[in-house]
Image 1 (tube, rainbow, N blue to C red):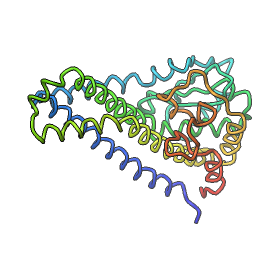
Image 2 (cartoon, one colour; image 1 turned 90 degrees about the vertical axis):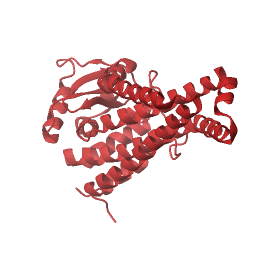
Image 3 (cartoon, rainbow, N blue to C red; image 1 turned 30 degrees about the vertical axis):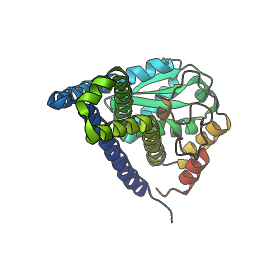
Image 4 (cartoon, rainbow, N blue to C red; image 1 turned 180 degrees about the vertical axis):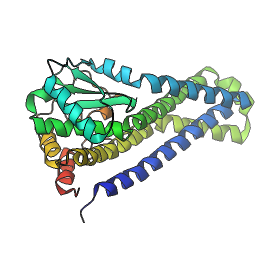
Length: 301
């Protein structure tokens, strides 16, 4: 049975909502255990609530600047990169969103990414290596993929996921340090079987937190890549353009020197050249390119 664009959108939205719900419940459980073990009472919950709010606000308004600075991206000169600007204008008009700020990432590794909290405050960057190997139709496919991320608010979603993931890791580190610093005093306060159970739960949550964060981030990222592929094909009405571009990215993949686990999910293709895990692994940040090409070629618009 051939999938339509709307089938993919509906399925990905359901899966994304489920992942966000599970992650939020996990974060709440970890915060509850920390407050109970440290015996902070109501003040502890207020502290964590305020901390989470301010953490998310700061990340929300600065995530694009962080991503661009981390990758060494610079504004694309309109004269030097005229074709790129023209393609971005064409695609944004077709997508019905404002033109994002256009950046160049100086690296021979072919890749691209988009960032920003909404279509009015968005940026997209392509590497010099990508511009060297793509023809105009293939570049349109890549740009449409990134514009789809912006139009679908994927960047906002991934910012939220990154924020939640970062909070889980911060809470884990805080919990482990507090265990080391105040062990004896906490034992006297908590006492009894209930305190021991909370300590065991807290330790278990702290240990599995990094694995859990990696699983959630990778799973949501993979679903968003499939959706952006389909949405990009819908914008250009030419799925083969993106399929051909993905084939070139697969065959000419190189590692980006400034890529990291924190920003790997932003790129159209794995910035490490190959996943440090197998591409079919549950930890992979990107779906197998071969499967993405197969989906594009079978898509009904």
